[in-house]
Amino acid sequence: MWDELIRQTVRGTIKSPSKVKDFLVPTGDPGLFGPDSVIWQVHADFIVMMIGGISSLIMQALHPQAMAGVWDHSSFREDLQGRLGRTAQFIAATTYGPTEMALSSIERVKQIHSKVSGVDDQNIPYRADDPHLLKWVHITESLCFLNSHIRYRDEAMPIHEQNQYFSEIARIGELLGGVDLPKDRKSTLTSIDEYRNELRMTPRVDIVINLLNHFPTNFLGKPLLNVIVKAGFYNLPNWVFPILNMPVPTTLNKKIIDTTVQLLAKPVRYALRDGIAAHSYRRLGMEAPWMEKPTTLSQQVR
Image (cartoon, rainbow, N blue to C red):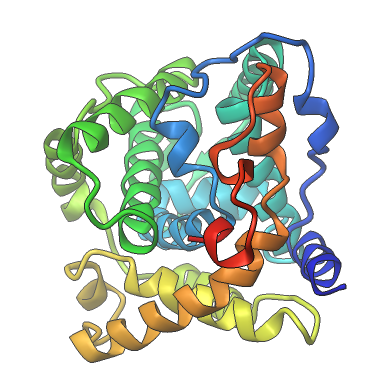
């Protein structure tokens, strides 16, 4: 009963049109990456991806031209859930989908980007397919997703696996039109530093933060979403907080949130264990590692 209630709450919060059965075919197609990739491990956890997604959204909003593209050509202010759902669908399709699904999803986004242009709030022109903006979106997402994974799933993740993740996810960014994308952790951090003088706090960022702090969900989902949003802020690099006019979270603040996330994540992970990632393993005639026996709750949600 609780499992189904959690699944309904998640579906109601994240309006993703993805259907797990679509990831079962065609048999034997590994997609862009396959089960031996690091990206399949990092993107498998709903909690991790939500926290990382919130962090990256905040960082992206601090770039005026990146923010303008979303502001002018998106319904996120009226339908934050739908916006998040479409992003979740794209990540699922490109990470776990069969090859045709992944490539068609990328092509669809490229077509949308080709029509998105304008000027930001300071009358500086932008285009969504500008490689400079594509790179900013890519590096913030990849860093925030991986940092969230390390924080909540694999604190001891070796650097060679981290570098492999950056190399793998760069393939998606390049197919979207990104140029000179970093392929390891060190160069990703260097690339992000190169954008820091382009970032600024604006009233639009305030609106994004307000939307996140009042994320629409039902009564049962509210406690979980509140913690996830807070964890999303705490997943930001410390240098971001002065730009946001916020104090840097203390070590104690972070510890409290981290502990709360881990407690709330256990039943959510168990309820969502047989989702898109698990079905993608089955497409290749395998069982996802977390679906294999032993099958007790404590062992499956580690």
